[in-house]
Image (cartoon, rainbow, N blue to C red; front, side, top):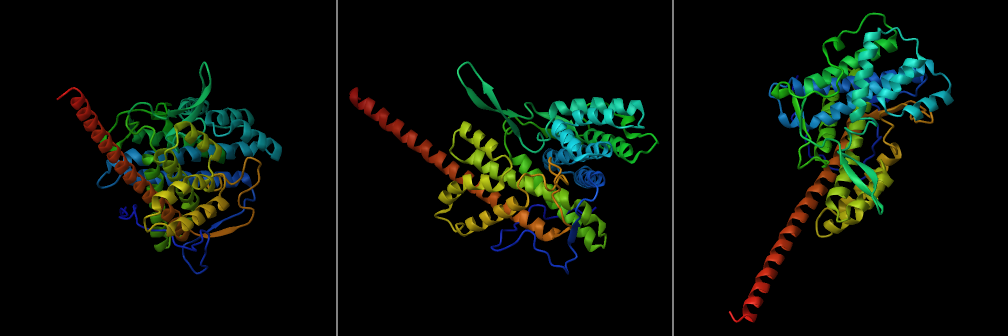
Length: 435
């Protein structure tokens, strides 16, 4: 497979650009259909997210010249995509047997994103024809996976924010996902996801033949070691709570899917763009959220408690996070030529917020209330939409870099000032003592 040269680009926001602009003559138009059967739609989402995970994993594991940096960062986006395909696949099986809207609401609300809980629920509801050994393996695998990622957020964000009580008062505490450096065997990691999904797919399709991929694999979520160029190293001590590896992962994997869709569409493989469009959009959308949170959490002067509270209050709100970092951006940019971008950035954030306010529209066909996200068929231009997201992420990354530079200059000035004050104090003391 050809390797794209422009996963990192210089696309910038354009005043007046619309995220959902569609040229009916464009060959890059995709269709998102209003669900007529949530069972079938959930399964379709599972297939699409699985294929996206598979193609990105194949890209980094079988590259002619393996890139260690990609192995260490793309891991997060790959883990989410694989994990998500299993979640919506299991829910598709559940909806085969849970028919009423009220029961579906209860099922989704009670199990949430917990693969182990979803599995337990559907085993009890379904008349499964899967062999006991497959289900036993799957159960052990999901139980182990849920220790690391119970809520489907361990591969989307670098840390959890917890509320802790001590003897006197409560406070927010940051809990990194990976406390220690781990050399993950990415080959086994991906193979286990694919083995689990093979069972889920056969289960959904009610196939009677045995699944094979799980038989040589341990039902353990993460194994370490493996071939050097198939390892993902995560949990660096000095960056374990930083956003950068995640923003890089989500932006570049989204860029890769956009490039891949364009390449295949140009070759008249028109089916490809419909499969990868929603996964691409979700990757981009999560990167925007991460980029905003990076600036808020790592670059502003607020104390940690204030930062944590706001992040929990705003949750997935793109517009809400932007409003809170906007004063800082205005301050740093007042003597630069980037003032003109402020209104454009705000417009981009508002458009994304209007389209997807809860970070779910691109990964589920329906909300927890069972209200569908696309009640009518909708057309999008995947190149226009991908460029829109990419441009916003690029400018936010530029703002982040500017904050880095300003903070470094400020730190240097403060260090120089402290050094000068120390020299003056020493001179005064010497004079007082008659030297």
